[in-house]
Image (cartoon, rainbow, N blue to C red; front, side, top):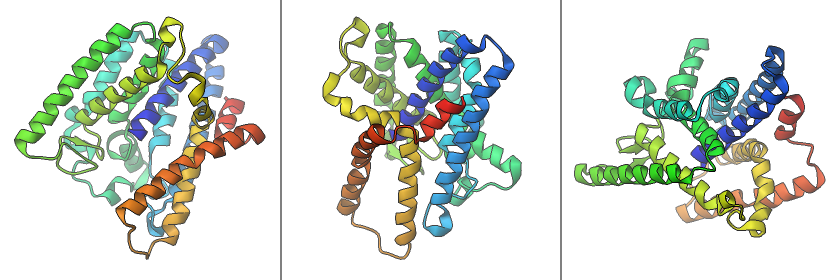
Length: 310
């Protein structure tokens, strides 16, 4: 759920930022370019940093040029100005189109790819193919979460529609579980033969994760739609600095993982319990670090660069 949440929240942010820019830009091309180009540049540089930190030949998972979730967000920034001119129904339709795109493109999504194929690209055509069709986070279907984020931003007042969509989605998910049980195949796998797969992300994965993103969103918004407090109120406000620093944390945590991967290349795999505890620790440590960052060095972050140059 981490990646769908991250992309959805990013879509929410891109949509909000584009709305603010429209008020300033007033359809001025150069003003829009000054919003788009820095975002694409900074996000692409961040992607290269992540890739370089986790290179395959140093125990990592990527090639240095592998398109990933940050190049996906760069692409989303390119379409941000277009999204704000679409109606809610049109954005919902676009979300559905991207959601079912794996069914449309079939094997072009790299169903039979080995991991090394998915993260490698030869030439500009190969790189674009990974970015759009069959990389780790290709536009088809991952842009569906960008449009989902725009819908969450623009649909706070209509909880009935969200409830109906959630109920329908949960019913479809239940059917998929029953189908998996009947066919005796796994319900979800990272990759392989399952009803839900992450690499490549199939339609059922996009639908299922999208529904749970909406459910989590509804929980966290609490009574905001009726003028009340969000879930937890001030009690969980200590998490907010980490949310405001999500891009910087994303890059930094991969750099740290890259250092660890390089040091552990020839070491035996950790026991599952040890790995789980270290993962929890690695995740949790960014919360106090983000609080410290916001207090002492708030101007040093990739988010600040985005604000400054766009």
